[in-house]
Length: 443
Image (cartoon, rainbow, N blue to C red; front, top):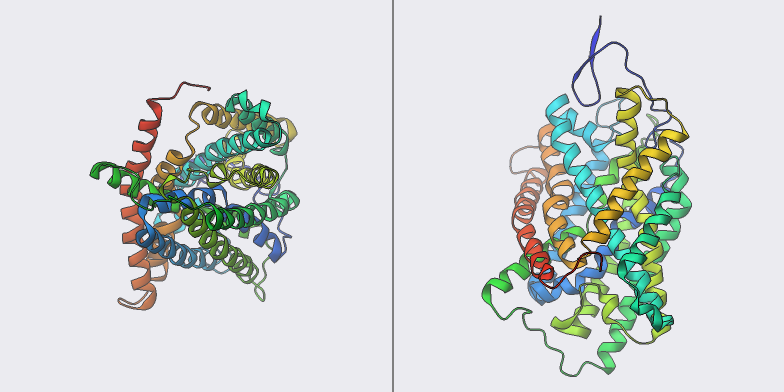
């Protein structure tokens, strides 16, 4: 009997089923360059932007600005590396992050180094977006119909989860292009509202605003700083779906997919620079150290505009949830079809995706700590996939000359990203522990 390795690098006897024409990442490869722009804006300009003023209040004007600018530069560079490495082997496409890891570190080690980290990013994003969607919808209803403010946040999160049960049945990435476009428009819309409303608030009602540190103790200040760095890291999360988005773009020897993909990334990062810079500065300037961990919660007037912004957030995270979930669906369905021999089809898709959405929804209603989750997940998982893992892969495969630009840039990104991954989860965990002292489950 012939033996071959499965997609996880394990020895597998017999014939392996190839479900690439059915799996959500590789089923459709006819995407246009602007599809990648939609998906990347939706993935990168996420709910993390709403926590940036809060992160600035934890890190201060100077340190917060430095961390934000460095994060933009490092992740823009590492995004370019991923786009370039997608087809660095002639005739082969690395359609998934773990596949690139296998090429760099070996079939088995590469899969188990990269896959858990990518999966953690997707799951963490789903949890945070469940919390964000529920809280934003509740705020919207509170402003329009104040009586709805008495209802628990749990009910609004559950409504968000119910919508995801339906939308999660979209078969592949390209079938989400309409949802992703709408989500991208919403993200730009609520960022604009957050900026203008904060600016107006700051101009007319800024008396007594303080920009000092949030915590009165040195230890609290350190924890806040670390959590703020993690929150900023969470705002740069698109790398974990980069290769999967690029896999949907057609590619030929004359016109590789990297050109279309890079156009989309540049558009997304221009939007990121404008939105992140304006919202973080305006939100912190208007409210100082008392800004909420979701800046839209701080905004109160005019009520209809803030309600609209929160509704835009709700619509955006519906689409962004799907963009980050599609690689998870692909992993689950690939395993069940290619390894367990289950028949590909709608029943399998409905069952496995519904179980995943339900599990994520349960965690979202159990631990709805937006600010703490951003800091914890941002450093613990996102720093690796966005800041330093692409750079390590680049050094392994491209072997740039010592002290060259790419060698130096990669090592700087690795060192800073590793420090972020090690230190910032401490601040996020501290924020959650403090919040737990006054929290009752499913409240």
